[in-house]
Image (cartoon, rainbow, N blue to C red; front, side, top):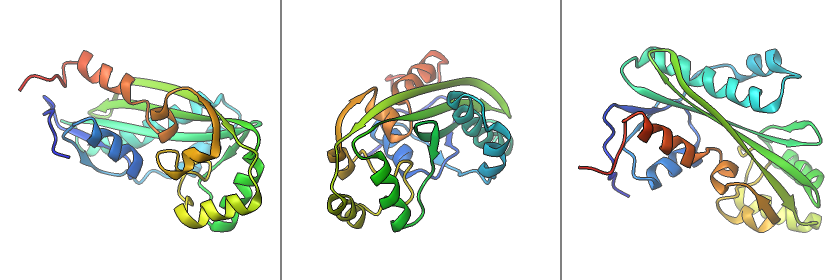
Length: 203
């Protein structure tokens, strides 16, 4: 899909997330991707015990700040996502076995997807925001879970599912934005970029 919105300043996405890249592309933005090299485990350890909205924003900001220092003239978008069930963080599973285990725990329950977003310029924060969505999963048979994991291989997805595709079939209901579930509160981001005068629909 060709970009239709040319920002007034260079936009950089400080994330290797394919889902965030797709959302920005679908919104018609012209941007580049420069994933950060931040060690997320260090930040998670430092932030352990803090409210989840603060944790996910801290992770997003750390990524954006690092990339922003390397591209000081650009507006850098940072994002992060955390899947939470019963106050436990469900990180990206990494393996088929862990993905199946995570989905067995989430089956028939209600859990939350927290999504943090921020904008940085010259290493300084311009804006930070967090949203969450409540996810109600069907009671799933183990065979359904195994089949799903084998088809989509969601080992790099928070919560072990890809809601933007086949994973939506796992859910009974969602309270919140589908953009938030996919890893980025897109409308608040677009609103802020418009408010800052960085994007509009004029040629």
